[in-house]
Image (cartoon, rainbow, N blue to C red; front, side):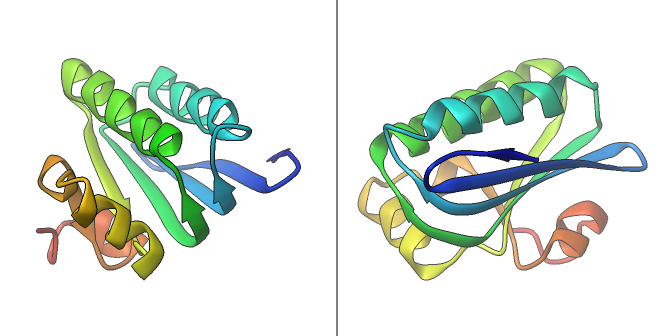
Length: 119
């Protein structure tokens, strides 16, 4: 697990998928940690990367940028990139920036990995 002043990130393999768990605040000071973790998850050539945001209290534009860049990298590699358990604070930023449409969202990590309720 990587830790910083306001952010904890874990990367876990589940079969052919990678689950990236994020806890804390994603801002300019911590977005590089997120970038490194997402790059590590993608480097393992999974078929899916599910980013569990359930414990994210805040996301800034720099954090959002890292999610978009990683989503693009995943797409280039043919990897599904899914945000799961997206809390209201994160949804608000996605909605305000009109970037919700860029992501596949799932209500849980399990549904992200299995696919039934993605939208």
